[in-house]
Image 1 (cartoon, rainbow over the protein chains, first blue to last red):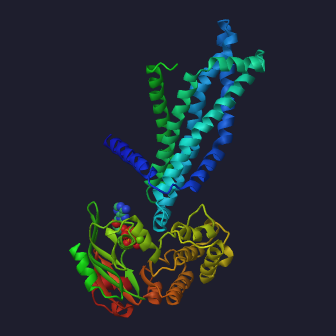
Image 2: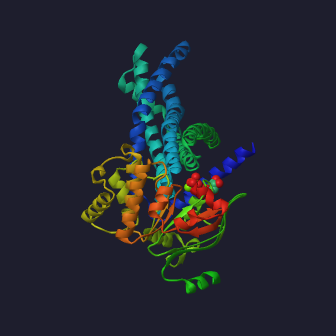
Image 3: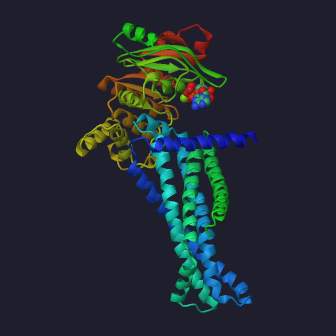
Length: 250
Length: 254
Ligand SMILES: Nc1ncnc2c1ncn2[C@@H]1O[C@H](COP(=O)(O)OP(=O)(O)OP(=O)(O)O)[C@@H](O)[C@H]1O
Ligand SMILES: [Mg+2]
């Protein structure tokens, strides 16, 4: 228990350092772009496929219930709200926690144990700025973009799902979707993905930077980066839903 | 401050590194306990010590990667613990460091690895000059054909050479070697040791070499320092220490 609080304190300090380093001069723009490309490129196919399948499955499974109430026409409405508000952003974040979070944890962990981080320091480079700031900024910006993509693709999956047994024309489906989705659905769900991205980046970097010596240390860093950042995604999601509820945004 | 001033006044111009009363502990683990040491210009000093005796900690203090608890480390006229980031970077152009685990960047090619310190220290040179420098150091270590390879494609000995090339590319006045031959076979180890001596003569480099490898010590050392119990326990030439009667010193030469 005591260990948990110490860990939380250390993560908070690491995060604090992120903000002080962020505003120091010489932003590593090239490395930042490289990271953005890498993050997007690495998880785009997986996010797209998963989002598509989720859209399809949720629609197919919601259908019988709505038919029972004779509310089949509501299918696009209901499905689009749950996809955009909850499923697409959370699925995106979890996939990225698995793929990007573990990647960052393992990469920085092995750089740490093979002294590459010290070597950067000696070569006139602040490793915290070069490695941590660029990666955290990368995840913070790219995960919202991936989530928007996931929204779109999952709604497309929903369209197909709605057409497997019933018939909903392309125009009718999208009209219904855009009629239902209001600012209060879309904005909070996008805003929370920035926090998902930030948490995934920070935890991956923290775990990598504090990796223990040896190869098992690197594996452990990658592993606990995934566990902690996935957990944080759900905690942030819980906080986000409370906030939107209080401000009555939906 | 007073200590530091007095120190500079008495410093011999031929001394490039001078360490006085260096202390460093990690929690209860007292690693350095009042270490004293001088390095003269053009000299190769080997630091011998058991595994875990604090040799790496010592040279990491010199390059400013670890902040000591107490003591002065005078490198080319500046006290390292007092330097700010910019001054540290200036010092690190003149003092090279060869890491125990090579520390080549896995995600970069050999060329990018070698260019990294040049670019990051803002040494403004044209593309052709950078390329020329890269090829020059690669020829020096005998591996010009590896320029576009990734570190993962190289053997252990080749990586050590590339790491040495990356240290040499800034033309440092001083090089700190952390176990340059550990993990290599005796023949490759000898080659690396000879390469170190060649480079030292060619560019007039002073160096501190950490090693357990007696072959390497024999080839490279002008003087040997024994790091025992966190202090400079004994110093002398290889032959002098080999004949020493002190039991702690003797252990190393059996
Ligand atoms: N960053 C650190 N935090 C805590 N303890 C450390 C740290 N670095 C080194 N130590 C401790 O300091 C002691 C000396 O370590 P050091 O790496 O200098 O040994 P060494 O003489 O280089 O050994 P080797 O020959 O195995 O490389 C060890 O007991 C080690 O556990
Ligand atoms: Mg060591």
